[in-house]
Length: 226
Ligand code: 5RP
Image (cartoon, rainbow, N blue to C red; front, side):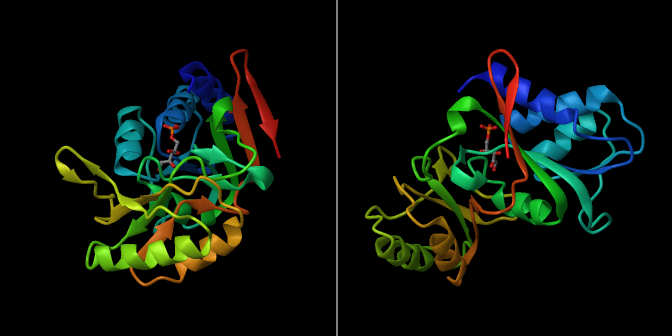
């Protein structure tokens, strides 16, 4: 993980934004570089839809004008980080527990740019544990159903609930996150559909067919994948 590469990716992506746009702001350390670079450009008439309370706080602090999906349901461009970038620009996201708001914003966007350091580009998805957002009510029952789905995909270890010293991690929406150590996701589309079909699963971190361009930071600058 290279902070310089994240910074280079975030700064490069900020150049894709034009005055007057509605911009989706991602969540995470790479997205934070983008938010800072965007604020520094001082473009006129921007409206920004943040994907987390954390990003909203940063954007507000930097003087960006915030909006919501309710007020600006059509987003011109979203720029956000990723935990893994696989073949076909299939992504794992949600390491920062913001996957639900992120996916809502991505799906409302005409264009999505994923920004990351070079280590995030992988030959197949699954080394990074797949985040799955689950309703707190009855979550252990839901976790058992998730384990059945994972087993059907030859993934032996059950998903584990995400927790910190002070207790279970809650998302901005008040839900819980389970992380599934898949090792290899052989069929991301089928796994996405199977997880989504479970009552109690709110969303998963597989972002498929949503990315238009990946901007990958290097030590010297950046490269793009499309
Ligand atoms: C948050 C995310 C982040 O974009 C992802 O975890 C990457 O984070 P970072 O840029 O800090 O490596 O999906 O839910």
